[in-house]
Amino acid sequence: MTIEQLKSAYEVAYQKSATDIFFSPGRVNLIGEHTDYNGGFVFPCALSFGTYLLMAPNNEQKINFRSLNIDAVYSLELTQLTTPLPNKAWANYPLGVIAQFIKRGVSITQGYDILFWGNVPAGAGLSSSAAMEVVTAFAFNELLGTGYDRTELAKIGQASEHEFAGVMCGIMDQFASAQGKKDHAIYLNCDTLAFDLVPVKLEGIKVVISNTHSPHHLDSGAYNDRVRQCQLAVQQISAVRPIKNLAELLQADFEQVEHAITDEVAHRRARHVVGEVQRTKDAVEALQQGNIELFGKLMTQSHISLRDDYEVTGPELDALAEAAWKVEGVLGSRMTGGGFGGCTVSLVRDEAIPTFLEQVGAEYTEKTGLKADFYIAEIGDGAHRVNA
Ligand code: GLA
Image 1 (cartoon, rainbow, N blue to C red):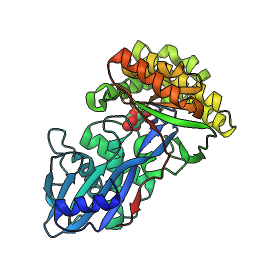
Image 2 (cartoon, rainbow, N blue to C red):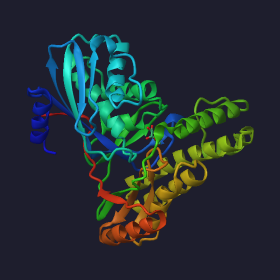
Image 3 (cartoon, helix red, strand yellow):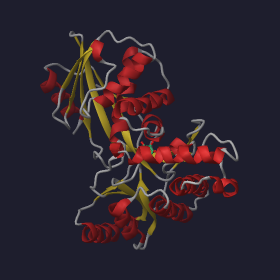
């Protein structure tokens, strides 16, 4: 949809024009998976697709939420903005963000009519929910003049996800959506939130996103289980060497203390995290030195660790990654995001793209009976205002 079409849709929905329009992107993570809530490094980039928010003040003491993607409409009194809606209502994503503003002492005295539209494929692990949270945080920050910086807006989005969606996620998705920059990836230290924007200019190579069309279910509990298993590993290691996060341990440190993790599952989870943090550091260094081949190999190793030690891939993601590894001209391929379905990300040489689409598509359908979708990723900017 174009901005003009979105404006018309707003007029149809609310019989007036939108006064403000904002956008915030989805993200694809190149490497550094399930490291964020362990205080480790991640390396995501913002995509050119994301969520638009159109809004205008109203004279009711209410915030009205509509979406062009979902039929359900919500209308909430200004006194009802701090309680989650039942039954996994989609409006909990923006509502949770507004509740965070209120929690920080901001009063909301004005009603608004809000319309969302997103073009991030939902349930694909490309952070459509973070895009909605961050666009809401960005919009209210602008309209209320609260002056939070982008990192704070990401924290607001993350807190909303914890408190209104019940997913104990890390900061990566909201951070990428808030801080993304065109043609750059974000090398983020999730412990300190210090970050560098690293140019991703790949001559003759594309970042290809492949969608399993098998939805990931972050709220299914499997994600929160991983968070708890990592906490258990921290607790058990701390008996021999006090640590706050798994990511504090270099590989060699880990080898000295891993015997303290008596829980077999927690041990494998911790081994993934420690290895993945090292791979992420190595991958960023490789990219900066122009060694894309090494970057690709580390991506593939990341997938294997996520498959065997972290157990968040599943048959669909494995089928896509394994099919990609066989194609000549693929430098690396791995699952991206939370896992359990969703997407893979691959580095593919330009000349190999037609073969990639054909072979990976065919092998995937043969193995799973599903049809994959492919997108060439365009790395876009973080949250911003769109001219109304
Ligand atoms: C989801 C979470 C992120 C991160 C990834 C895995 O996308 O929202 O915080 O933990 O999974 O890397």
